[in-house]
Image 1 (cartoon, rainbow, N blue to C red):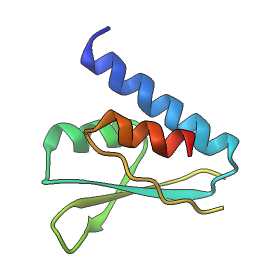
Image 2 (cartoon, rainbow, N blue to C red):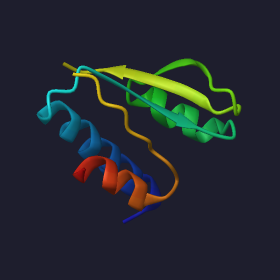
Image 3 (cartoon, one colour):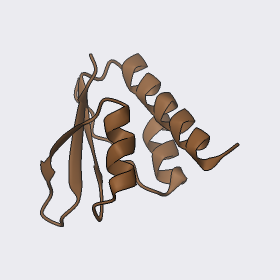
Length: 84
């Protein structure tokens, strides 16, 4: 499986997990600013919501309780965010 396909599959699984959990809105950050990451998140409907103090870009997305998750380049971080 190509890296691009893995990224899509992980994002779709994360978002589905959030929906099933009844999450209304969540946010993530990526940094340093990475144009590929920005495009990836926008493709999935995440909205750029400014910058954090450390320069990371903050994105938000609404679903249907508010839960904060962190998505990083480390797949284990994303897996923990999905699995709890």
